Length: 248
Image (cartoon, rainbow, N blue to C red; front, side, top):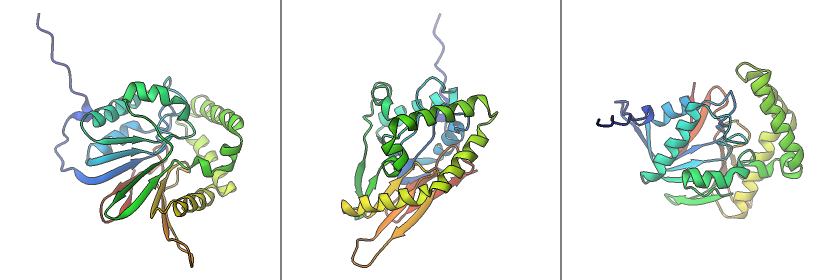
């Protein structure tokens, strides 16, 4: 008996719509494994784009592989397929998936890194997750891990769709002024290394801010947002600009 043809994954089937081209796409904070993660929406969005480079800006996974749904696994297979198809895939460490580097290498064949630099149309870019500018996480690794586990428990056990833990997380970030601290720390790092643009995640808030002071190098900070919020967001980069794109 002849074996049946293997079914093509839905995310590889051409949608028929014209795809948007970009040099680089930047995705951050997908948190695969959480109830609030939106891998299906992300895959549906990515089907409409074609890029030369895909930057995964940290916290793509949330702590481990055990809680992944079918769409979460589909996204990882999509990333592996992109890398095999010639797209430059860059995976950056996040505070929730840094410890998974060996498994990421085995499954995807991509070596995670802390920072990534490149140049496009004369503009010097650098990308980091941004947790290094979060003093609580950077200075209290063990406590931060327990907070993460508590957050995961609340997402899975105490919230049907994972929404109210997210609201609490946003309130906590605003109370600490996390968005401003990460932006300022990132701008200082970019200036130190002579970069024009620095891209981060971590805060889950899409944001673009220009830092320009007399006698100092002007730096543009752009945060990619996340895929656990509504709307979700990601960055597209071409020779002209960095754009924040929103998805309902």
